[in-house]
Length: 420
Image 1 (tube, rainbow, N blue to C red):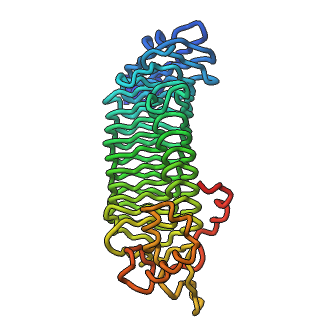
Image 2: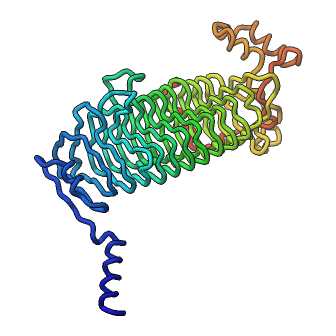
Image 3: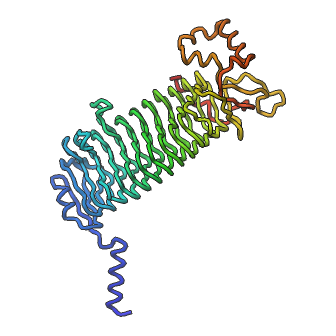
C-alpha cells in the first residue's frame, strides 16, 4: 500500500470512530446557542455547571452534555430545547421553564418529526408544560430522566411527562415522572419498550393507545387517578409491573387483543383490573390484592385465558357484567381468598366450583345501600336460595377447581397497604 493510500485509510478510520470530533466547552457567561452554531456534526458541546437563560435549537447531529447538571431555563417561553436533526444526544442537564401553550405543545425538550435516533438521558426536567415530546421518530431513547410538571396548574392545563407519537422502536426506560397530566402518553406507535419507569401523582400513569407489538415491563405506577391505561392495542406484553394506591384502576385493558398480561401486582386500587372489550389475551400469574373491586369485567370480555392468578382480600372480588358464564382457570387454577369449598383429597385444588358472584352481588351493584344488609338473615337466605335454584342464578365467572393456596409466595407484603 502506498503512503497516500495509508494516509487516506487512517483518515477514514478516524472519521468512522469519531476521531475528528471536537469538544466545545461553554462556561457561565457564555452562550450555549453560539457554541451549537459553531459546532460541526459529531462534535460535543459540553456545558459547565451554572444557569443559562436560553432557548436552544439543535439542527445537526451532535452531543449536548452537562457537567454537574447545569440549568437551562427558557423563562416561560416556547420550548427550552428543540431538536431538528437525527443522531442528537442530550444528557446531564436541568431543563426548565418552557411556555404553557397547550396548542403550541411547549416542552422542555421537543424532538421534531424526522429527528431519528435521539437520545435523552440523565436529565432533570422541571416546570415545563410537556416534559419530552417525541414525534415521528425511529430508534430514539429516553432514559433515566426525572420529570416533574407544573404543580401550580390544574391537571387539565398540564402537558404529559413524555409524549410518544407516531414512532417506531422507541426506548423509554428508567424515568421518574410526577405532577403532569399523564405520565407517559403513547399513540400510533409500534415496537416500543417501556421498562423500569416510576410514575406517581398524575392522571394516568400511562395513557397508551394504538401502540402495537410493544413491551411494558417492570414499571411502577402509584397514587394516580389511574395506573396503566392500555386501550385499542394488540400484541402487547405487560409483565412484572406494580400498580398500587390508584384512585380508579390499577391496570385497564380496554379493546385489547392477542396480548400477554402476566406477573403484575395490582394492590389497593379502586379497581385492580378493569377489563372491557378484551379478547384473546392471556392473563396469568398476577397478584390482585386489597382493591375495592378486584376485577371489573364487562363488554363481552369472555374469550381470554385467565390462569394462575391470586385474588386476595378484595372488598369485591369480581364485578361481572355479562349474559352468560365465563370459565377461568382451565390451564392453571386461580386462587380466591373468599372460596368456602374444601379439598378432601389434599391435591391443592378445591373439590367444588367457585362462583365469583351471584344475584345478591348484582343487586349490590345496582343498589349500593343494600350492602348495609349484607349480614342480615333475609339477604343470607336469598343468597342460599339463589344458589339452590338456577332460575335465580346470575351469570358468573366460574372456576371448577380453584387453588387452595396463593401462587405468589410474596403476597403478604402487600397487606401493609391501606384498603382503598
